[in-house]
Length: 224
Image (cartoon, rainbow, N blue to C red; front, top):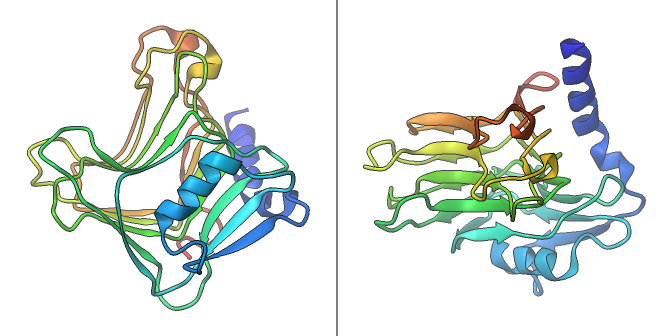
C-alpha cells in the first residue's frame, strides 16, 4: 500500500502539467511581469483562472526580491505553475533576511496545487532561515498537493538561527485535517549550506491532525 501511494504521488506530479486545458502562459520577465513579486501579486489577486496559469521564467534571469507569500490556490484541473523555461541556467531568485528569526524567502500559505520548478533560490546576506516555507493559513486551511522540484536552495548554516532548505510547518494549530500541510512532493531538489535540508513538522502530537503523504525523492533520472 505504501509503494502504491508513493507511486500515485509521483504520477500526479508527472501529469499535472497536462491536466490543465489551454492554461494561460505568462513570460517572466516581461513588460507586465518584470519580477517575481509581480507574478505573486497576480496569483494572489486573480488565482489560476478557469484553466490554470503557467509562469515561464526565463533562463539566466536574476531577481532580487522581498519575501514572497502566495496565498491563492490552484486546483487539480487549474494548477498554478512557476517554471524555468529550460533555456540557459536556472533563474536566480535572491532574498535578503534580517536579524529576526523564522524568515522565509518564498512562503506557500494555505494553498494547494502550486508547482515551483527549476528556480535557484539564494540568500546573499546569510540571514534567511528558510528557503521555502509551506504552512497553513488558519486552523482549517492548510497547504496540500504542492510540488517543489528541480530547485536549488542555498542559505548559510552559520546563521545563528536554524536554517532549513524547505520547511513544512503549521504556523497555526490545526483543528481539522484540512488544516494540515499534506500530500506535498519535493523532487530532484539540491539544497546546500543549511543545517537541515527538509523539516516536515505537524506541530502537534495528535495523530489525526498530523501531516501525511509528504514525499521527498526523485523522479525520472534526477534533477533537470
